[in-house]
Image (cartoon, rainbow, N blue to C red; front, side):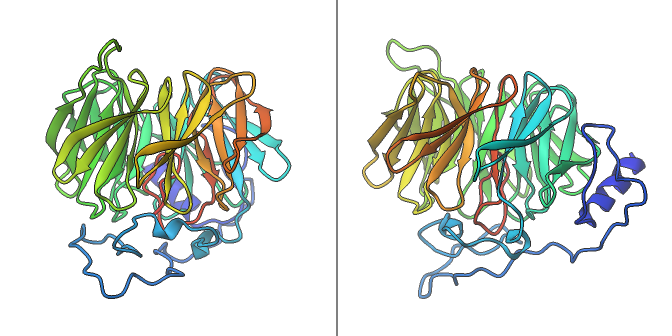
Length: 402
């Protein structure tokens, strides 16, 4: 284990390339690590809203830029200082071929494809935006990527990392250990296990944090349940079960997203064909909104006005207005498709999303739904990450920035 700690320490202190492909890749012979400053939250380009009372936050959590919009730091151009010179790339984990493909969004061309551990599920930006972590679920490891060079480093042993999140204070990484039926709280730098929390559900997979950072909501894919977890105490507070809709299969909750005002959670439900709306405090089920067959991934537009929903079962994208809770636009992918997970381009113009069952990546213009590109990648592309994006820090998944 000491060897892994040393490798990560070197990785965090270098801005030069890590070479090679998968789990056994080391630094190039003769490479000299270049020290970098201790990661900190960059000074925001916008000051917190004046004249508003900021709620009591999770200790150590950066104060929000706005009392009414948790995504206020995600506007176009608001890059953290540490990522301003990093080239924008699309990172695609191919679960069926144990690889990651990198795409240049300007040319729609594949730059490289490299091997990872077994069944990579998501590419996740670290809290301090310094590393991208590939979640090798069945490989029981995380492969780090240096976003400056796009090259992978030596993998770190982590049990069952289906998905990965970071607490808003940057103190812990949280692994969604789906097969193990537990939440694992790790050191966010060494990835050493600090606490394992068993959960009474099957298929823990996605999450999002409350506006004050004190709790987070977790979806359980295979049992139709939701969990409320205390962030600081690292303990389970509440279990909810989603109801089965009339003439529908049992619920299968997927992605989770907090509303901009912090008052509601939206939960995609692949079998109910839409999103559930829950109050954030206290957490309670309030409504269901149909969006399309196989509702799966959730993303917020750069102006914080709309929620983007990928409907994997019907090959469409829905745009839901937060103010009215109505679907205001719906785009069908020409010829069909299976839009899964992804992210919004830094300027907010394009949705990049994996085509899970079509071995492609889609670039879709959000203004009119035009398919700009359909790029072949490996088999089973899943948790695609667009990086860098505006925002001060990452809460994990494919890029939840605040």
